Length: 449
Ligand code: KIV
Ligand code: ZN
Image (cartoon, rainbow, N blue to C red; front, top):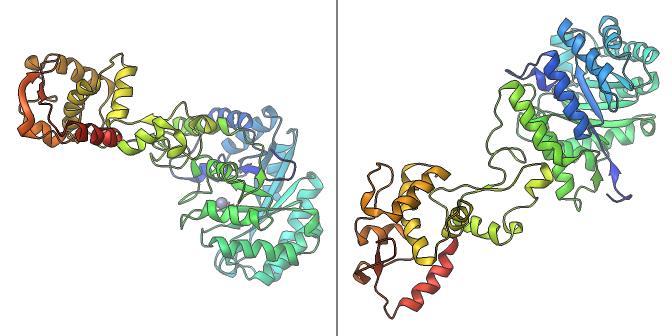
């Protein structure tokens, strides 16, 4: 990557915020396994858990801190002594420990949740950072619900914690309320107004309640944030957190818009996504960007034809670049002859154009009945096409009349043209007519359809 590109720190919180999503809790062994994959992936910071939350969480953070040595290992703490001391106890043997302290700053949270005044909030934040700093050099502070906090008060809190020694200011959109332009302006305002900001890293922590977590995180980076907090597969509280794979690949695929680099080995993204899904038992949504099973699958015939000729026609990144074994041509009713012929070849059958048409007609009928035509269906269908009179399976009907065949076959074989002649597989052949040349041209055009 170019030396002119700014480096963005990838802070993974799959094991903390991600684990807070329903059905995603993990035991110590599973957390350690995932932390090792996050290490292979090249993330800069692993937030391993919330040590005060439970003995299990404490032990997991401790085990990760003692075992995973390259990345920074962070532990979460509320802005109070017991939390901070417990976090340090879990983290103290890490090669690079970080204490992450959070305290809500919005009036809604101060009045209804914490029942403290703004002045009390500032004092508590200051005390907490001083304590954390006395234990650990690397201290992150998060003003929870920052995007619904009065901006002047937010700057007052941030001035205070920077003075007390915080090294990273993380700005959470806790409730997923902000939008990219607004969040970018908030980060720019913090850069302009907070005293001592040049000494610290600004971070973004975005939730996905309006489906804008990734866009908001990228807007923050464009406005000067140099750390993003994210999770594998975008898991996290409620609608989840910003998805790491989407942020990393947006920067990789669009360096013209996002000229930043990360330490992430993007080829490890798919493996991390699969491992998380396997551990939690929560499947990845099929159309999930980057890691969903359809992210590189093509079913429409025109798309399949294009991808087979040149993947750039319908793929903006290679499957390999994110660790997906290969792009998948899904055979369904929208598939065309081109994809079908390639799959037949992969199964050991090569057909000339006519023979392929026969297989294709049956294939379309079958695909109309069952959504995805798997290899075993196709093999059965090929065998059946070789012996049309013996077909007795309920799924795959032999071609019984030419009119029907014309309906399912895109190259419009007119019923009038059908003659008693059959092809080598015993299927009736269309009579060669004057329109044959036109038909061949049309077939060429419809190759992908
Ligand atoms: O969403 C949030 O505000 C958080 C903080 C603890 C950083 O997860
Ligand atoms: Zn969060």
